[in-house]
Image 1 (spheres, rainbow, N blue to C red):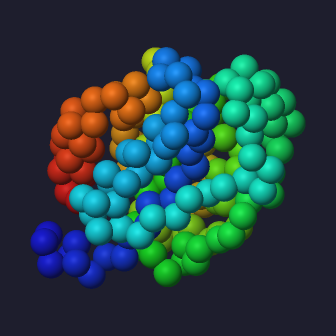
Image 2: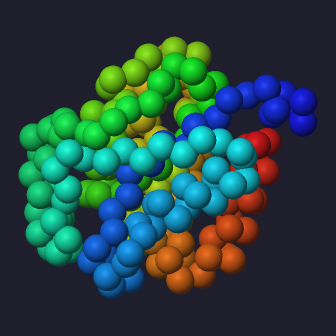
Amino acid sequence: MEQRMETKKMLVAFFSRAGENYAVGHIEKGNTHIVAEMIAAETGGDLFRIEPQTPYPDDYTECTEVAKRELSAKARPAVQGDIAVEEYDTVFIGYPNWWGDAPMPVYTFIEKHEWQGKTVIPFCTHEGSGLSGTESKLKAACKGSTVLKGLAMRGATAQNAQAQARESVKNWLSRLNY
């Protein structure tokens, strides 16, 4: 297993939002960003941040209203930059759980790429809703991929209990043999 790990090329692609957040107040680095960095540190994966061309409002309530409208419309907001997902074997996809789904820019990113034969591993931050069925939504969006068991971490843990968060990440990766 150790030898196989070294030959796999891994990507940690994530969407995260700083600013005013539920349960943790105003933050400089988003909860999902923190977890993504932990995963990359443990796996040696490359980091790629999925960023919308039009940033979400800093205000929490305004942000949730925009996110809810986008979800209802199945919007695909334009994103900045890209990375060649096709060059990777394993892709971790991270996001905050917004209204029971990944934010719509995550789908903009996913739909730009070919997922056949990839291993996709979701992770999300939340404040009580867990993965909310996002694993099956990613499986449908990442056609032809194998989707492994995701990690759901409370944003407050990622933000305020990083030693505990890091331990959770290590244990999850170990269960997945990564």
